[in-house]
Image (tube, rainbow, N blue to C red; front, side, top):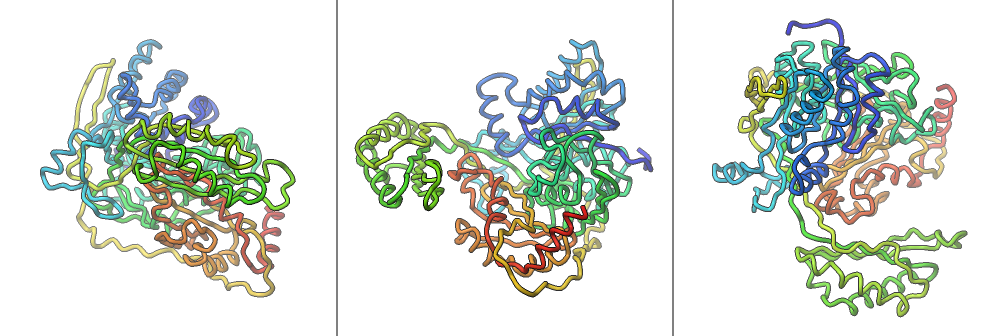
Length: 603
């Protein structure tokens, strides 16, 4: 298409598989939009879909998306609203066929397309035989034992979506396209961008990253939620993407929540690593982002620079790790350590197998008790035990029986907080595959029948790549405040957003004035973070600066073990990690508290 001056408004109606079912109708009926998108996939979702698909036909895609489309398909066609979603999961063809059945039942005739090619599960043996060893993204170790995996999907970019839209598709579903690709694709199609329009593509990826998790851009999971109106029912966001890749983030008028520099900054920090945000279409430099509030619930993102993407694609792989049992016994009142020791001793005496007979044993004491507790609940700590083994029987009835035997014969105040025996768990691995080995298959359906098939290469242009050089945007020129200090929670001035990246966790922190940034940047070193988060004391931690948005991002390697499904942490996705650090008490200049209070009063 020729370049168009008018921006394109791209709305989100889903941030995960299970999000608000009414969101599609809310976005279609609540105000003007050009494109309706939704993100249904996560690393854990791919494992869930793989297990569901193995049990029943039609279980490989997000059925809730099909239900949403039944609600809005007619209105979208009447208003010329295009739909793009990665709800195809492990079966984009099946998802497209289900949509065609809905259309037929409603008497509608949309052009439906799907983008496939991401599923590498059946190709793993051939790839290894050809010398493509899919090295681990973190360790570099080659792939071993490919037969143990139940899913293996490369992250596709936006150009298959662009091709489908060029061919007249009204609805496009994909497999494992990146979360941002479903926004970048419609923007690139609408504006006619070339594959090496790095800055424009990077701007669209950033906009996609902001709205991909739905209401997390409009006040959901926001540290300063008490400042946000209408939090009982937060509206979903949209991004209005301009021809140069800049965007305005907003929401429909009259909906709950808020779009502010704070909510947008918070979401920018979600599940990222280095400021050079790698993608299949472009490397987006998050350290060049500029944010401006341009009106109520309107934030402009501009100045984003892009670089060529890597020559490889990320491959998300899930394997069944075996079976696990998770137990938790209350340790109430005094002598917590002694009670835990006795509980553990008695448990293993009662067990038919010893700790050395299991593939993995994790025992820990969780100190949630308080001194001089004012309630029974405040007196309770927990002894937690996680057992893992390939043999389901080892973590089955025998574990439950051993726990039951302890009820009257061990610690005073015994009760079981949790007893979950014998459930399967998965293990995640992120590998790399050359992009030129993963072409995108674009299939267009008309009246439910295949009308055309095309192949779109996943490789990005390399010409003039050496000429692209991006410098980080400097932050505010502020002096580190001095004067008297006070001991207060870090969250009095800092917001946070955290999440999972396979077995790693990201922790992003941001502040809202220049003096606070100068202090945070100076104060929160990796060594100080280790002190504040003792669980991470012995782990590898990377620190990344994003001064233009007054933010720091830390990557904590290995905090989640083998990934979300295998983690034994209470919060296996690290969603609450940011709020934990905000609760930690630090010494900070008292003047920062006065600045924060004044900013809140003026806002």
